[in-house]
Length: 260
Ligand code: PGA
Image (cartoon, rainbow, N blue to C red; front, side, top):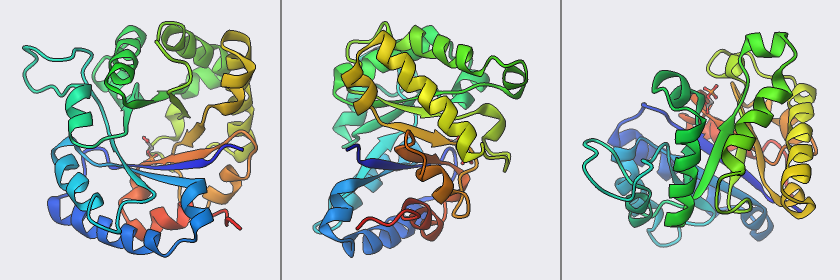
């Protein structure tokens, strides 16, 4: 059975104090979880990169860590070099990161990252030992034109067919029309796309890859709609933006489905 992964993507929000307070609330709640809850659900915190070191130090404090992991929001394709302002995957590992978001639609749209750059970033992350969370998704126009599965297949093909490992990766389906808009995909709509992704993986990787990879949904997830999404058979977790800034909401989202 696949475990679930609940990711907080803070984007360019927060302060040192907010990180401290958020982690204090999170770790207080998580330390009270049952052993089963700790092993079946992983929580990932992706703060802005300038706060990763602080978060890493706080997460490592005795009794606070499990099951909270650290993730970055971006990394560069190169290992090191003259890339002013950039951060390499190795540096993220050095800071204690386990995950890195790659190919988020905001990076694709606002920073012109194309499939090739995304594929190189996935490769760089995997080589450094990070697990990339590869984001894919269609625009409203592409959905209206009935191109959703084709767009996602092209995004998967451009990246997965070129990366080193098809197992050390998490895929997040984030329809662009749902990100930060308050419009969430209906659980059934999301499930249909997730099922399509598993089908693609079955054909292009293997049955084992298809059934073992974690597929997350992201796009205006909140405490009210989390349950319906998490109940879908092919949705293994959530990538949460705006609603992750408040620790109590984020915890409510992740715990929408109770673990016995
Ligand atoms: P949102 O963002 O939850 O604010 O829509 C999700 C994301 O962009 O990862």
